[in-house]
Image (tube, rainbow, N blue to C red; front, side, top):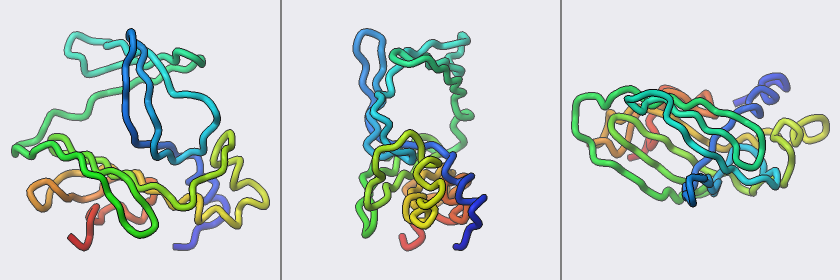
Length: 173
């Protein structure tokens, strides 16, 4: 897939990661094993607060840096009782995770080689780095619906690789 410099610059603004979450004394730490953006040297730690009695809207406030994120829980689980799936994915050119809950999934596949440290992916591809942009942007974070193989596969609805939208997460399964 060929992209213009403007399209590559836009793709570099995306965010997404996969890893583990830990909590100590009400402070949550997101360990970014796989990250679309380069490592900045700062940790991702914050406090979570539910904003409504149904606990469907949450605010994350930075514990070490000033920032606020507003999270809204996905829609209610659709009909069908799919089991929760957390599967490590290892394939040529990348490793990652497939995590599925209810009728939805996230697929995160890391890029190889890893990014050098930087303030942002946009900074890396600006100017002379544009020649490396295709390699550095080749990391997938996709969201989709579980509609194949008893919920172990599904159709990608949104992705950091827009050309994957509408495809199966695992087309050869």
